[in-house]
Length: 168
Image (cartoon, rainbow, N blue to C red; front, side, top):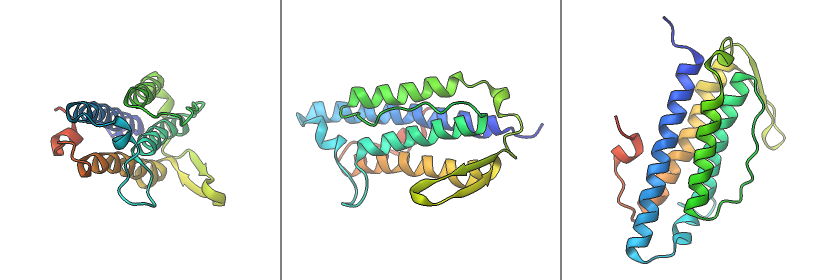
């Protein structure tokens, strides 16, 4: 049986969001153990022109829920980007997971050929569903999750590759 669009997307997003949640929990414990303000980690960034940790988590959330909604042809939920604490970031990740889990697998049927049009910053990007998932949605999602991991790692949070990959 061929791999469905649902199988190629939702388990990947869900697994990585759960890993992101565990990484955030480890970062919060690290700050508490060191007596540091959690905001130092939440506002940290890899470079001056890059988004801080909070925005990386928000962007990963947006990428996952956007892909699910566009591929399944359902309404895209809007979450305000106001998270400024680890509990708020955890809630954002949990809401994203809940949304992904609420989308029935059959809604993805035929989505490999569904037209997806994005309009970021005045541009227009057109994809078929498969191209969107494989060349835009998944790479964008992993960019933001990886950057969140890298920010925390650079800030001294004791993370390793298995934290990123999650439990098997």
